[in-house]
Each structure stands twice: as structure tokens, then as C-alpha cells.
Image (cartoon, rainbow, N blue to C red; front, side, top):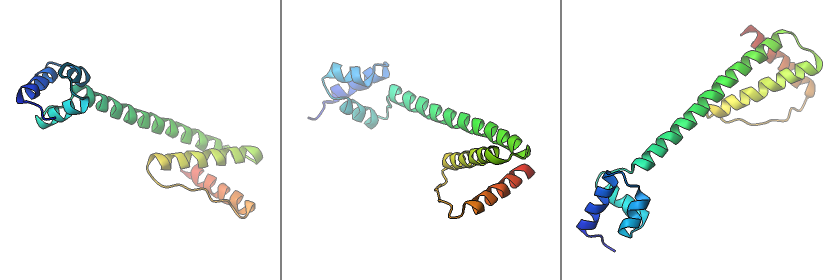
Length: 138
């Protein structure tokens, strides 16, 4: 159904007055999609929609910043624990904490991660000790 110019102008006036797309659609007995199309064709944007998009983008960025901040704190804690020269179960816990933090940081940075089952547990332990030495030296 083609809208009259009068209906389009009424929709535009309604949106400019701050009425929501949903309410405007009810008033003019058209779909919300039609109201959106009219608004877009006239260079209007729905203030509700754009503010929600902005709020969501801010929430996502804030969450990412907070997660990065927390992971920095946890990396510092792992470094303190590693410098205490842990042995046995403590060493395993520190290595696992470091591995998980590294994996999660890579995911946050958009890098691919994967799990590879070590074929030689002794070699894996040696690699863990080497990584701890690197962590201790900064």
C-alpha cells in the first residue's frame, strides 16, 4: 500500500515531536517497519533506536574495558605467585592460571586459540617452568 504525502508528513511530524515509532505506527495504522522506512527516507532517525544502540555499544565497551582491567590485575597476581618459586600443586595452579588468562586475553583481542593435548607430560611441565621463568623476568 502506497502512503499519501499527507500520511508521510504526519509520521515525520510525530517522530519529530518525540513520539515513538511504535506509537506512531499505531496512530497511523501502519507497521513499525513502514514508519522506519518513512523516517529513513526523510533523513530522520528514530531517537529511541539510536540511543539504544549507543547505550548497548557503551555497555559492551565498558564490559570489555573492565574485563581487561581485571585480567591485568590477575596477571600481576600470577606474576607474584610465580616469583615465589612454587612447587608441586602450587606450580600446576600457577601455570594453569597463566594459561587460562593468556587464552582469555587472546580471545578478547580477537586472536584464535586452540587446545593441544601434550604428548609428553614431562615436556609440558618443562615448558611450563620455562614460561614461568619468562614471566618472572618480566
